[in-house]
Image (cartoon, rainbow, N blue to C red; front, side, top):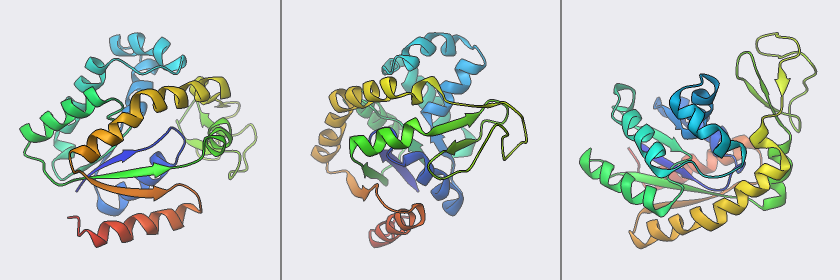
Length: 219
């Protein structure tokens, strides 16, 4: 199974990707996580991407395409993948199409998540992460204090710079300008497109996704 998760930041793509990854036993490929890891490790890529990410801008296509190409051709993706956060521009989508053709992948399904901007702001600005283990939490749903409930570290819960309101609003603006045209591109290519309502309980959204995938008999 080969899935692409499409939609604005904070719409629930990452949450559902992790669930679907376990359900179908295929890797969740999050370009955002890859970039944050590169920044944390101070790699050459991370140094280039850090300022761009913190400003809410898109990382250059050549960097993103290189990361995705290397990952999709790795052994862990031999049985499929869930691609989250890529493509974000029409140029990236075209490059990804070329890569799929090269790899003889022709059964890609796009899950398009939809959510109101103000609801996104509320969700994202309440996200928190543990500096020690990397676990993510949300103050809207999780009761946490100064101790990470996963690893027990004290004083490691923080708000990422790219989850602050000013940055997330910028990211949404960039999404509307650069990424919405990707939807039109895929529709013009007659891609398999499934619309997902981002409202509701996590389990409800998961069940909806599974039902829609079953209807088109994705394997």
